[in-house]
Amino acid sequence: MSKNIAISDDVYRRLKREKGDRSFSEVIEDHLDRGGRLGDVTGQKIFDPETYDHVSKEIGHLSEGTVERVTDETP
Image (cartoon, rainbow, N blue to C red; front, side, top):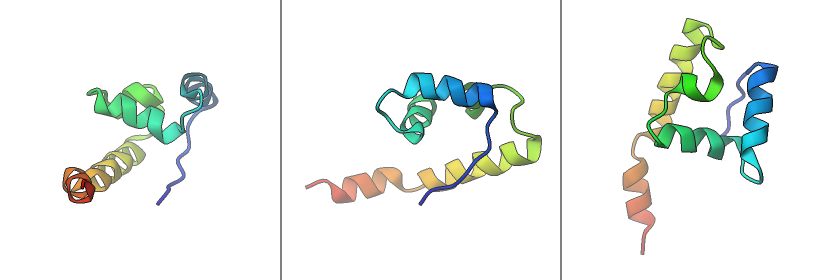
């Protein structure tokens, strides 16, 4: 499943520079996996508080059960 999000032109350029042959999702996921915060990936104050809360909750929801799914798929 994919979601569309709005980011500033500056943040887009930063992500594009960093991504190389990876997807934008992989770049963001790498930052979050290293203990980063959403603001570290997108830039401070890019999202209004309501959007930030929604995106943060969505990331939490999408990550629920990830370890179990990976474990279940491992031979």
